Length: 90
Image 1 (tube, rainbow, N blue to C red):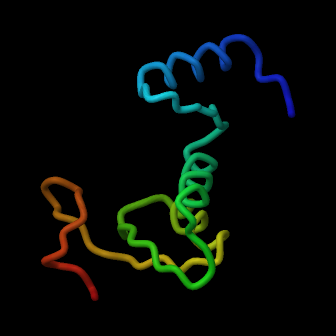
Image 2: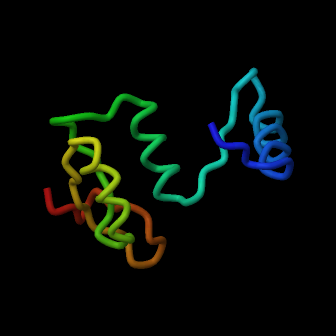
C-alpha cells in the first residue's frame, strides 16, 4: 500500500472523526474512484441496476458498468437538478 503522506492521513482521520461511530475513511484520487468504491462497498455487481441521471459525467455510468451493473438513466427536475421520478423514462 502506498504512503499517501501526512496531509492525506490527517484528512482521513479528521473525516472519520467527523462521521463518528468508529468508521474508517479512505481518501481517493477522484470522485470516480470514490463512486466505484462506494458502489462496491454496498455490494453492487453483475445484473444489478443503478439509477443515475442523464445530467452527469460519463464516469458515473462507467463506474456502474465496471462492476457489471446496468445504469438506468432518469431525467432531472430542471429547477433543482435532482432526480424527478415523475418524468422518468421508465
